[in-house]
Image (cartoon, rainbow, N blue to C red; front, side, top):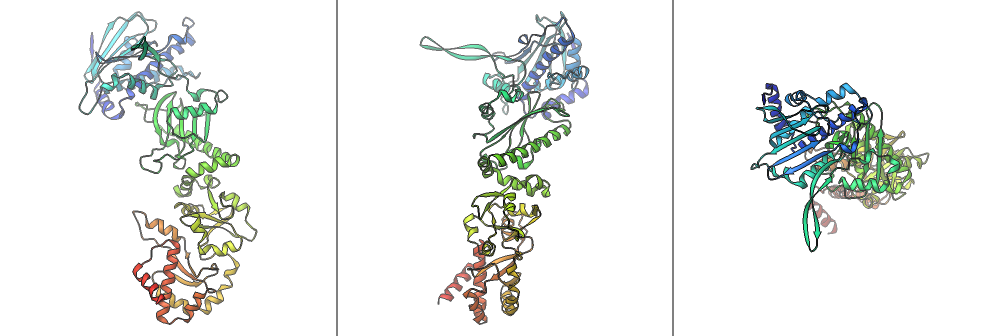
Length: 617
């Protein structure tokens, strides 16, 4: 028996891998199974150039065995095996990658891809085992060797007996600690679930003896039956023509992407600079935790069928965070843990392509199946509007044709394109009104003039709506205009200048009464039946002010409010005939009325109530 020592840097690396790099202990099994798959791939490659080798796939498999009594977990394969020198080279030097070197030498691109980096992920075993034993016999050799280690202290290599070519890895599972339950890695159900989670699509069968209950006469008996645990052929590697909608829906349910039925699936198979396959889903319903900090966006990321990340957030922009699904690529560059990408240019390339594809599919859904799109938009439209606003409007061109708003004329959601296509020639702006509900907006005094002109109004009820539109600024060269804006661009406003001039003293006195509360008091052109309303000057609307005030970091940003008076209303005559005291009373009452209409708090409710009583008396 030869006693060997790890190099000093290898000892440090081993310690770092066990305690730092691998945060999720269960992935040790993924690493060992991937290594076994690599070993069989190497036999396949060898058969391509050696006429003396017949590669019959049924002879190649991985076996996982549990021995609770001896606390061992064994992973064996019928792959190419390792010589003594390869055991030393691949297992004796951490970060020595036998598979990576093999792939570099062979460069075969026929659909079999070496997914493991043997001398690295193998050491994840020490997270759950205090002793790791490897018994291997290389193809073409009559000799077998046993490699064994208890960790950073070093390892031994000695000759041993093994009848068949291949490798056996035996893990002596650690005893439980107060904060760690290692017994779970000796439980059949747990090992099966780990295999299904990470290695379900390894191309070789993963066999395991599982307990089955069988009725014998009147009694139920348990017996061990060998079962293939993994699916082997992933749905995304099948041709689309082989698959039905039911197949895609079944995969959606099996992967627990959601409890709903997906509205649409997208199946991609891309060959080029970066090769990848992907199945994406657009859900029907919003997850219950979608707008909480617990929700984690992202797609499952596989490398040649092996799960690398449960949620790869970098594959989706935030505004498409509702998309579910997976991506599998053999071209990803992985570092020693398989979990952290060595470089992100491949990922960025895939993410860019996925984003474009999702956008096109949503456009097609909008165009060809409006009912389904309306369902989707009811769940996730708000997220698209966030996308328009976020990143300083970087994505507004991509998303502007996907967003919709409720129409005063159509009484349903419409796109901006549909709105603009119906605009009369004399209409200068795209008009909108904001409020808590469609019903409340319908009753707003500010809508009267625009509605009287026969112009369509878009109703904004989401807190993000006006912010998104401010970022969009224009659509097809048409500027957005709030019905509360100081300048509506309608001719009737010109006729109002004379009335304003005639009553400038009255409006001046009212402005003095409301000093600090409003920017100005003006005669209104927009009001028909209502006596008073607010309009605004500047970029901040009253709805925006309410939203900003509700935020934790309230900076007291306020809209520049203008109190507008309907000069054709009986109230105006009362203002003109009032003495100083009554003018102040009426002015404050009208101001508070305007606040109530907008859903703003009345400054002093007691004073407001006393003023009403004063009028009644």
